[in-house]
Image (cartoon, rainbow, N blue to C red; front, side, top):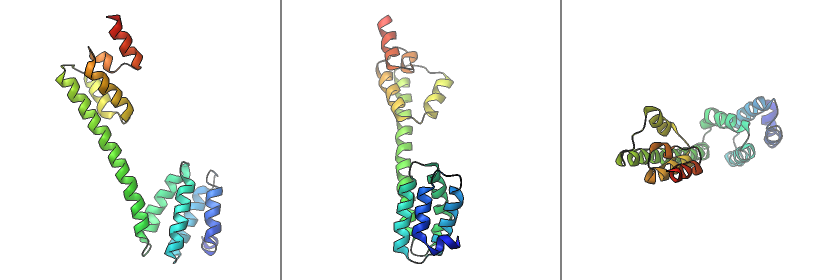
Amino acid sequence: MARAAADLPMAVYSALTHSAGPRIGEILEALAGAMKQATNDDALTVYADLITNGLSGTPAAELWRELVGTQLFNLPNSQSWVAEGFRDQGREEGRQEGAVKGKAEDLLQVLHTRGLVISAEEHARVTDCRDLELLNRWFLRAITAADVHEVFAEEAGDATDQAEAR
């Protein structure tokens, strides 16, 4: 950590270049500890943004998020950029969860209104589903489906084929 604190730009570079390496956990822990000791909040904001963006899409990104959440929140005058990032992420996740839950509820309502009775397993399949596209497909099928099997057909063509077969 002392080496990272002595040269934060090099520590940031090291974290980014070794993001897929076996020692990335150690590197990120040292970097987070060094950043906690730093006093230049403007530089910390730049470094944190670089690291967050540079690690995006890598397994190390989640570790960095955890470290930032547990170690950097204690920095004086730095909470705003850390908290803002978490709030934005939480808002987006909340929107997505709300959209999924709403679509599942809409689907169940359409099925009920149309008199299409579903099994407990199918009900759980709907309420446990987190794929908004799939819920949308089921919802659209539920509007015109002759039976529940058409709604939950694996492929869109399956529902069409079943309807044409009648």
